[in-house]
Image 1: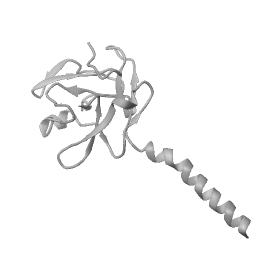
Image 2: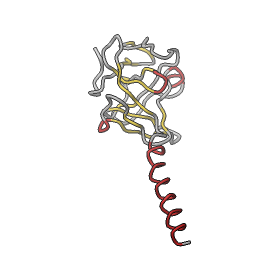
Image 3: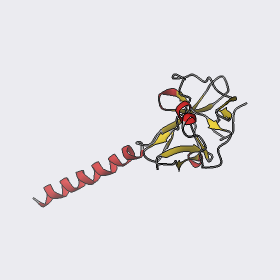
Image 4: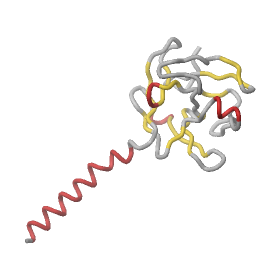
Length: 143
């Protein structure tokens, strides 16, 4: 009986340990891959990510109609640095209302609402009062 309890306890602890990485993976995964602008950051489903010229470090200035055109890259847990992304540069900021937005090198990340997977239509484009750029794994805007 003691052996059965010990085996059950071990199995339970092993299961919890193996489940831990799955909990970490619940955050939004950001990866780096090529584009016509060089290697840049991508969100889930090969969605291009952008930064906004008017944002301050760790603080979004894109709300209302701006956020309708440029939806923030949200995460429900700690974001995950995928292939080619520097773990030290990925983070979050709290938006008004409390939702967590993914940041990279301190810059809030966004999608462009009118793009499909793999498309990059708005790099170096002035919309909603500022310029939008894609960024590379070094955290700097692409040329």
